[in-house]
Image (cartoon, rainbow, N blue to C red):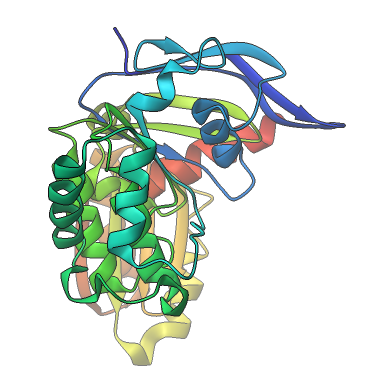
Length: 313
């Protein structure tokens, strides 16, 4: 049984097709990254999976229950929206106790679970402060705690670290990575580094349509092209950029990007590039500070696939 399954799931708002026939599966115990540009349909998908919105077509199942059929999926799901909102007069401890009551947890279990989760998100010292004075980042962490109160089988997270500072992001991503052994995590984001850090599998969506779905390692193996990075002396930047501009016309070069003194060359044939690239550097009389073959990133895959998908629209 899949933790999440959708079949031809779609959603339209007037003339806008926010989701266009989404079919995907998520294995149990997976930290699943749902990746796409802003406006791609990520939040719409999560709202459909939680039952907060009704599909215009297709079906979805979460934790073995069909969404919208009988409401039983809600007890098995935790949900963190992109911008969580809470009653400002409550304290974190009161909020988590309230959520526990909604799920029917006995008083003793609520107390234990509240203390455990406050400690887990670093809120033990602020458990009696009013939520109304919390920053957005603090509300985000509290939102993660409330999403875990019922020990969900499936945890749906919509941009879970977008409001956090670097230290907070690191802590929450580590927590999300640990949760994979306890439940299935479905995390939407447009931050590729976060997906690379914690996700086992990835789906890329654009304009409401699924572009690709695969385990992260398989995705990198299947779609990445070898990349070379060259860094010049700062005094040679102008000549270096002019030289890089001559490379895209070569049949073994896929693309070239430049960021100050660093040039990144994606190649189609790594063997040819090994022989020809340095030779061309020497011919141009350039002096390099650094030259290396780098492992292509998920960002390279994302930009390539989304770019191809855009070209077909």
